[in-house]
Image (tube, rainbow, N blue to C red; front, side, top):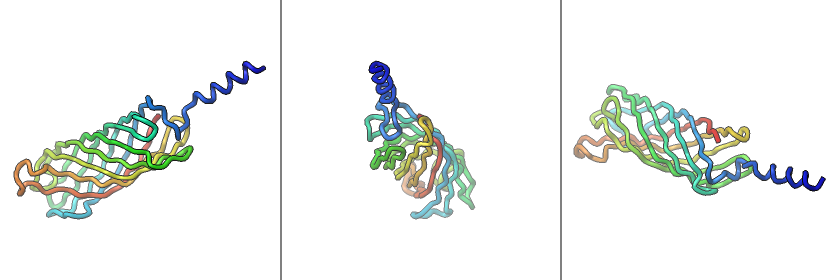
Length: 180
């Protein structure tokens, strides 16, 4: 029946494929990661491990804007360890896309307020910036595996003077799930 064939065709084109995100689509992401201070060392070499949750919204086929909430444990031996909750805005650009995979560049910034001075001899309040490259791979029509490499910078921008502005320059990896 010609009418039935047209209905079937319309129904299949209404399904958003992972490679062609709906501009109005919100996403929810949960990830875990670790970072290791790589340069500009302080009295201790910090290691960070933790998790993040985030929401993003497609601005266009290639651009996404989101918010991530992080909770990181900062190992800063011999100084006192700290928990570092942070909130960051993140902008992602889909640099390369196949039917089931997107490679993206990302960057963003925000603020944090730690349980102790981070890094040691710094302040509890810090600015956070991050940039990196990542990949999202569709597992099915609703779930994507997401992961990437990030550079993480934590610093108070000399709010309490240059002598109280040690920073963390760390590189790391994260992996998680993204729900469409």
